[in-house]
Length: 359
Image 1: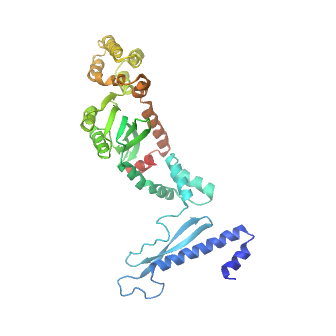
Image 2: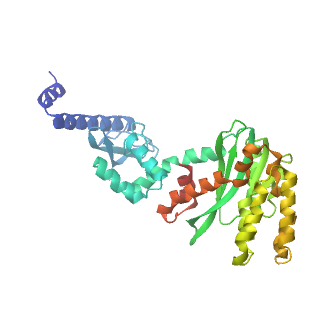
């Protein structure tokens, strides 16, 4: 009977002793493997006069199912040794790391996660440690931004929302969001990007990027009143149609009228949504012009300029018109994103915000 068998027999009726035995043996086995990987034995002259040799070690603690073990990772003088026994920077079981990433993606702060994991599992997780675990998602987020896209989407919604981010100081920065609906009805967040402000140059770059990544055809784009948006879309997708978001148009009307006139004007404008055909909607819109042009000349002038883009949804079947002009889907997505990011208060870097959205 060897020593391990004897120890096992003595610990057989005590679960704590069994776990402790396995923990000790696992720790010893891992450290032996690390020593053999380096090849330069301690206190021996292996490697001397060859340009490299052993140069001490550093210690790491790793959580296992039998408890925490301490491993001694040897180093060489030239810094060329790369061990393969233990994955780099792994200090926790995959189950706990998945839990951390899941909580992080739900908007729970790193400090709250650290406290929660310690209460649940008894292991100490510092906020910095939780942050490092979440950084393991960075390659996956980068791959998402570069992935090949489907060749066709029926419609694509373009919108921005603002989230606090630190560069030199903390400011609310624009998150550009694109959500598409495929011909089979499947919804997909095509991509997003982050920039200090919203401008047409970034939208133009995103659209060109979609084309280069495989998105060849879009039937309809929906967006707000960003200057130059329609032209940018035509450059990459000349056959696509364009619908201006009516929610944004109504907000503009609301902002440019006296309080006493707003409700009546908006009630009249909303009637263009409910007509049975495009001709009747045009008639309602022109009546709106007549009723309000005298008091709000600039409001009516702006509407006349974009009139072709207000009623594009009438070119499609009645069953899907409301989903086109309402843009509830992207508004709902933006609201979820803001709720998710609210507990974070602000993000210290663009990378941290990008990763947080991506997970």
